[in-house]
Image 1 (tube, rainbow, N blue to C red):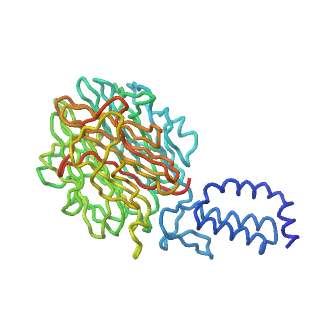
Image 2: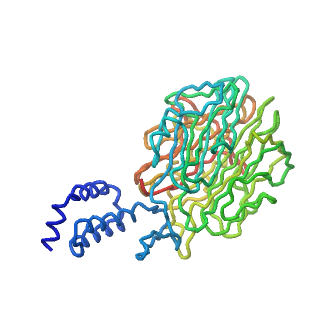
Image 3: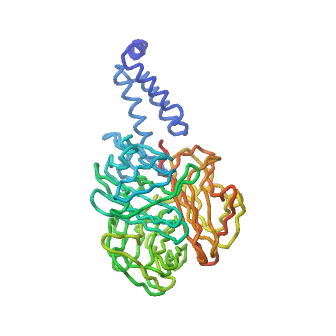
Length: 503
């Protein structure tokens, strides 16, 4: 035994061992991981015959830890050394996620790729991404991307999300004599080397608003967590033509970007859950000129939330997000509240519907033991005074009761990387000015105002949190916000979930 110890300490791997131990002191707090590390060190003293074998023992345990831990139960195939989730190999060892913002006004006329100048959070990506604005996929997987923006006053924005040379989604906004918010999202399966980027429309005068304490234009992406299903369930559908949908009809999208698990039926416009679990859904749209857009997200026959927009003499953009618990066979769809005239062309894709399984519900495992997710809404109109938190009263899902209706806070139950989505609709002719905060740190803003009408807005961010950190939505320090809501009028929402417990 003494000879083994002497060999280990005298080897040139001593520094590596100590470095590895130092790197993992903080991240390996959880009881199971601590036990695994203790076991590894015991194996070092008992079974190692060389320093190299001793170091391999420690490294093997680090690989287990670095695998995605959001599913409650993991197992190790000792024969192959592979990490599995519910019997499926999990090759997602590292989190890949980012949120970038723009904290200056941006003016472009030549169709440039946007290089965002504010890093809100980045994980698992090279510095080349920050300098070029081009996300290069480091490993095959399912990724979700979101783009939000706000025009300068009386200016237009027209942004485009691209995958390599393919247009994925468009973002357009203009409000005469005011600011206009617009956004879009897509879920894509990427191969290593695929490129994703946001650019301005070619030969179009684009001007977006931004300052260091007013970040409205953001670009976010995450590799979606392994859900516990072999073929991770996710889809993204778009509309690339003008369409009119009558009151009560299901919105039909004419192009499917991805449909892993075959849950989405393009002919019926419905997503049918293949398995029990927690799912996230995003839907965005653009009305034809001078037309009202009013769409609702339904879970079976139950109303969940809605988007709304109307801009006189212009095209109105709107969107929303919700996280819901589904049973196998449950149906989710987007319906027209009233007649909707939607704008779209082959090179202008504004109306989208995307969804993904965040985590599968396992047999005999209570909801409280599932990975963290929450989604809440506002079911009444209210005026939130300046520098005050928005108190959402309607719960869609609230795993571990992490969102507190009494305080308006989401409190992280565990360290990890989280994604948050915020949407709001202002009362008629009233401005909405909200901010997302992490503890006392400002993250991003939302703003909307459509004179004599209702203006919708939103934003998203990926943030690293420690257990006990709080995230909340509040009004601007010097501005109140009049938010609109009511029975079956849920436009103001706040949602979040754990992307990865490894960072």
